[in-house]
Structure formats: structure tokens, C-alpha cells
Image (cartoon, rainbow, N blue to C red; front, top):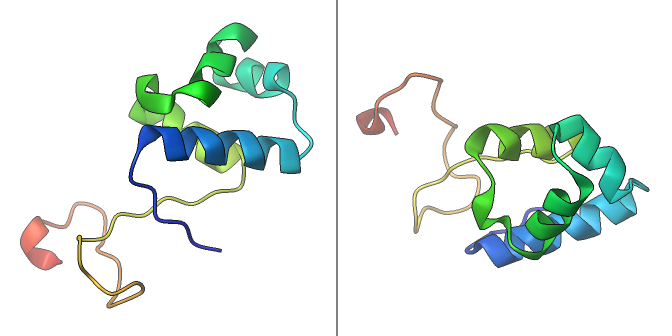
Length: 90
């Protein structure tokens, strides 16, 4: 299932529901991210404080993939750009 995320609040909700669906506790996930359980609880309420590095680790941990697509582009249109490709390559 693909979800289009427009806000940190939507991502927070996705984190929480996916974590619970995978049977993981906040403490387990927090430990893997090297943060406190209290801090992870805050991120589940407001993910705006997530660094890109932690966002990527968390996504992998929860079995999620992230991709970037130009606004207005049809979902799945074309191929994804290669790492290091310039914006004009899109």
C-alpha cells in the first residue's frame, strides 16, 4: 500500500500504527535508534524533530520504503532517478 504523506503528523501516525502492527514496543524501537523511549514517544506524537538519518533508519526498521516524486507527477510514472542524478535527470 502506498501513502502520500503531506505532514509530520501523518508520518507520526504511520510510525505508530506500523510499529504496533509489527508488534514492536516503543522501547525496542527507541533502543535501535539510540534514543530514549520518552523521546520516541514524542516522535510518535510529532515527527517533525526526526533527522533524515533517523527517518531512514526508522523506515527500514519498520519495513517501509521512502521515495521522492515530483509534485503532480502520476504515481509510478517513469523510473526513479539514480543516486547522484541531477534534478534535470528527472
